[in-house]
Amino acid sequence: MSVQLQLGFAFDNSFVRDLPGLFEPWQAATAPTPRLLALNEPLALELGVDPDALRAPGGVAMLAGNVVPNGANPIAQAYAGHQFGGYSPRLGDGRALLLGEVFDINGHRRDLHLKGSGRTPFARGGDGKAAVGPMLREYLIGESLHALGIPTTRALAVVATGEDIYRDGMVPGAVLTRIAASHLRVGSFQYAAANDDATLLARLADYAIARHYPAAFERTDRYLALLESVVAAQASLIAHWMLVGFIHGVMNTDNMTISGESIDFGPCAFMDEYDATTVFSSIDNGGRYAYGNQPAVAQWNLARFAETLLPLIDADQGTAIELATEVLKSFVKRYDARWHEGLSLKLGLNGELQTNTELLDDFIELLSNQRVDFTSSFRALSSLLRGEASQAHLLFEHSESFNAWTQRWQQCLAGDPLHIADAMDHVNPLYIPRNHLVEEALADAMDDDMGRVEHLVSVLTQPFEARPGLHEFERPAPSSFRGYRTFCGT
Ligand code: AMP
Ligand code: MG
Image (cartoon, rainbow, N blue to C red; front, side, top):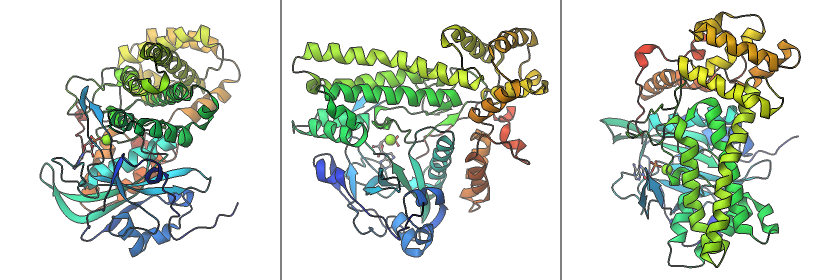
């Protein structure tokens, strides 16, 4: 298929058209000397835009927010949100702008959004800016999740603004261009539900249905259908995260999308050794967003979403609560099904879930008891099937319980072990964004050396296929890296 590349974006801004009351028109601050640090060529091509046009001075000026592209209509979106359980009625894009929407080469509508583009009416005490390190981190994590087959917002580019900003000291500022199926959040609904304009909530809900779950229009109870769809999408997303050991770190309701894409990577990180209580974020003292809490937190956030929809679900509040509660309860079943399906594929099993669930759960218990590196464990098992036992024996220190489990496991496998091993390697990544490597790459980037970031992107975007010379990318952080903390990284 040949695709006509455009020099610029062809905008069609439905959010601005349909949802007055949910945004403030706004302009980006001027970046003094914008310089392109990273450009996501494959994503540019997916958007039908010529990467060279984005690399040219006019393109970089646009990515920095200095030039408003033809057809864009920049706005700061309004939203509310529960942050660590506490409710803020007015958060909104304090340092971000939606430039508009464009259709990609597959005809999908995507948001084009700038982050770090200056203070907006929602900025409160913030400076409206973003730092190079955290924006490149968002780039890396998004590309990694995408390559792992996980729905996510993605970075199109990171541009250094040429301005230093104050964080823990002076650091270089940056603007991230983000592409998303939309930026509708649970917090958008919380904001609309509390609005004086009684039509806003229904307009938003209909907009979300049209954009993400159009099949719901065919049902008489379309708002309940919307809730069901979002519950299903989030159950699947969180299971995906859990299956790769991803810890988002700040699962506030304003950081949970209606589309089911991952969004807003601040203090996120991947777990090394299996421990359900793992927390990396320096601000998550109570462990609210620990690895093992993520499914429960998602369900809690979805309950906040459901509350906003009650008046649309049924005029009688009691009936609405009953209906919504049933749907919310289905989260657990949906999540468990996705998790067990995914885990059984990771273990090379495709048979009867009913009989295998115990085997799956016992494997996780084994990882937990022996503090085994989560990512490596699955590749060690496929190696075992190929007759290479050394990695497994290194990882699982208590060989007795490990051997007992592998015996049960091998009895459940059906087919040629070599084929099973290959299938496992297609779903179990070898390369994830190991925390120490991400930190090293970002430190270099702060010193103007993008080499490691670029190399890391190239490694992470082919996460399943072993390649020579990349051994260091397979290994967990050295023990000196224990107690790793991520900072909210704004
Ligand atoms: P986050 O923790 O990145 O999801 O952001 C939570 C809220 O704080 C959102 O409303 C952001 O727009 C806002 N925010 C975060 N950092 C800044 C900043 N440097 N300046 C202004 N607003 C910010
Ligand atoms: Mg956020």
